Image 1: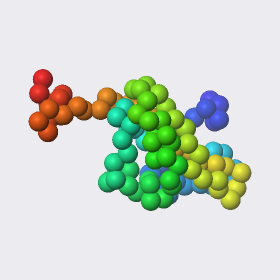
Image 2: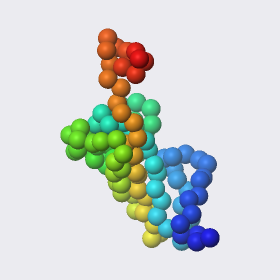
Image 3: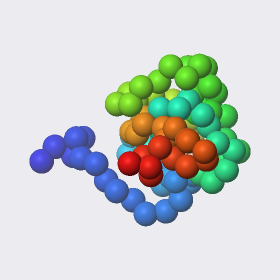
Amino acid sequence: SDKSSQINHLKGSVLEPIVTEGDGNRMIVHCIDDSGNWPNKGLFAAISEKWKRPEEEIKSKDRQIKRGEALAVKVKNHQSSSELFMCLLIAQNSAKKINGIPEFCLL
């Protein structure tokens, strides 16, 4: 098989991806909803603390994102020739709330 088309799954911190000289570019995939919101908690907050560009990219779209879209954002140039990207994958519909309860829970 062609090594350039393989996906290698690694264990570790999403905020500290493993980079080995000569391995090429890296991509972190982060699944988000289509609300256009960037919460200030959990993994979202950790990403924003480390890199500002993913949050800025989502906010610049002014809530004009749709499920199925993907946004690739360069977050870092490594010392080697490789770069680090974050793919913001809009993978779910946002949950509209009725009386504080997500709409899909009321079905």
